Length: 359
Image (cartoon, rainbow, N blue to C red; front, side, top):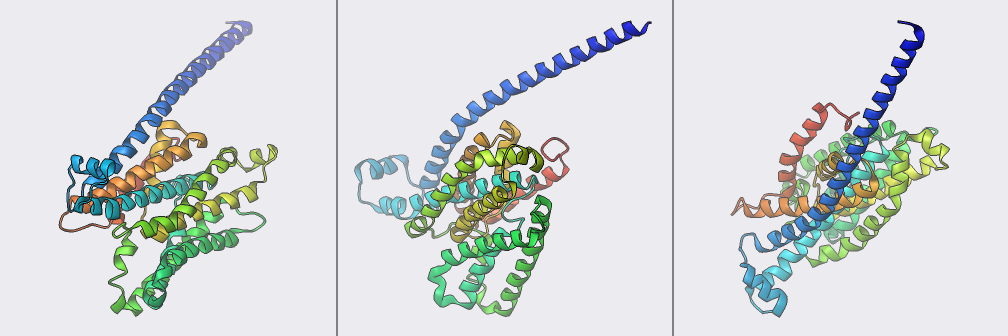
């Protein structure tokens, strides 16, 4: 066969492969678009259903007709006290905690280009945990400042991690390594306090496990301003996060100030994680599991990933908290333990999975 014939065949094969690739890409885009619409409908519905489930189930089950009487007619009863003073604020706190942790995890995974990054793994949650441990065990007279100290501990830890990773810029790898080191150091300090003050630790263990037991309107009033501000700021982080996914060099060519944007996104993630930790304790795996589940379905685009992760995080935490306090009656299991049982296998699955998610 002559060279011109070989060239013609080669060009024809190349066109066929390109056509097949384009067709596959169009099919993937259509499927992804359908999944986005489906999730946009399902997640709000799930959020409502899970919230109602969390309100009516617990140590005392509330019939739906009694719930409607409380909501529609303001009927005074024991059920009204349970619903309005105990269940509703707990569900609302759970929604905000889940949304904050999931959004924080999604931002960290994108800005660090590490699919296994989340507030617990890089040390932000550990900073809040240590600050809370010091407040509750060493300075119990200031226990009323617990939410503020936990929030401050998480935020300061994020700054320390970034400063330690800085050397003519802070690369995602350095930030992760610094976070792991700081996480280990803070964990050692926390364990040391537990050993030295072993007679005072019993009251702290539920908080370290993570949970929403006893959360009330007071806790909601404290965290709501920080949570709402942080979640709204996530909307302004969508474009920078998408551009950082292209790589630092590409983002710079597009006129982005990469280091400043990375720092601001990490601080925003710390704000969200610190807000959640300050009220719910060391609740783990939400920031890891939820963004990945959403990403597997709809892709990396932060225009959809951030809002869907917020909704998914709220659904997961409220559902897990309701299961933890109603399925193991008369024991109320800390929600952090249940989430660890669910999240750890998923974490191991991510480590073993071969595919674009971990590439």
